[in-house]
Image: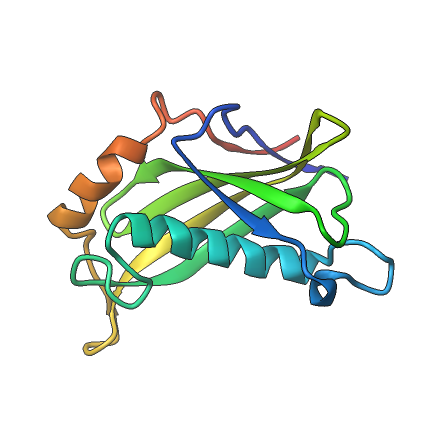
Length: 156
């Protein structure tokens, strides 16, 4: 069976920290996959706040999830301080693709926990239609664009 591989750059232009809470732990005693997806959303909200945006109003457009891919690399545990890097890997007509690198420091060592890519679709909630990425949003995202579009999805 093929395994999804994400090629996320080592250095991303935005970072935030989010702790693993007790409710994020599953019956296996580690960070649950569903909790990590919620943590990625929280990190994305931190990123959007930096741009003076939200998922409901990103420079005049809403943002809805078009796709999500996550590759889990290591276990996360209660009390871990997750360091989440975010970069803009691609801006298309109506979609913004973000890439994420999730890591933790343990015993002085940097430990990668997960990588992810999300495709956010610009959406007009009043008209219930997909719309183009507003130029103001493009301009705000530009400093976070990864040079050479280095992130990619690979099914090898």
